[in-house]
Image 1 (cartoon, helix red, strand yellow):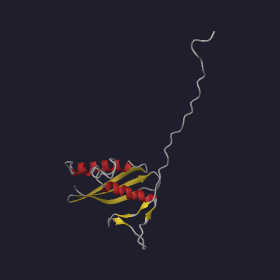
Image 2 (tube, rainbow, N blue to C red):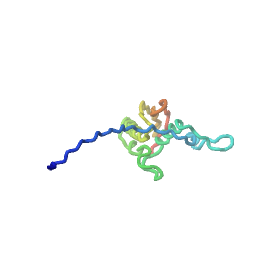
Image 3 (cartoon, helix red, strand yellow):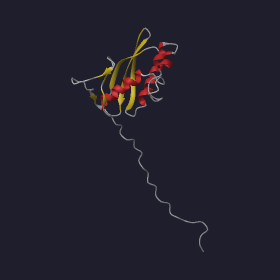
Image 4 (tube, rainbow, N blue to C red):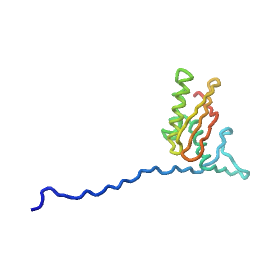
Length: 150
């Protein structure tokens, strides 16, 4: 007589390794932040930066961009300068800027860590320097990014 409850062998489960793909460092156009324009060669063509340099430029651009201010950027791009500058003391502003810059840069999978913040005040302008550590490559010291009061 057949069993009322079926019996079967449980197949072995194969666990798949969950590996994150290596982040890509695509090339991009080289930008001169002091002049506010793209770098051009002698023939007037825009110079292409390697992927590592493009990532460094992305870090600077993200710090210079106010989050939620421009429809062209996604909601997770940029820093919350206005909110940070509303803090009651300069020390509180610096702590908030450190938090928002770290959050902004860690959104990119190419960024592993942001550390060693230093701040310098000149009137209502704030100059910030920090070290950004990529997943691949050497850490870069980003110096003197000016944060203006909005």
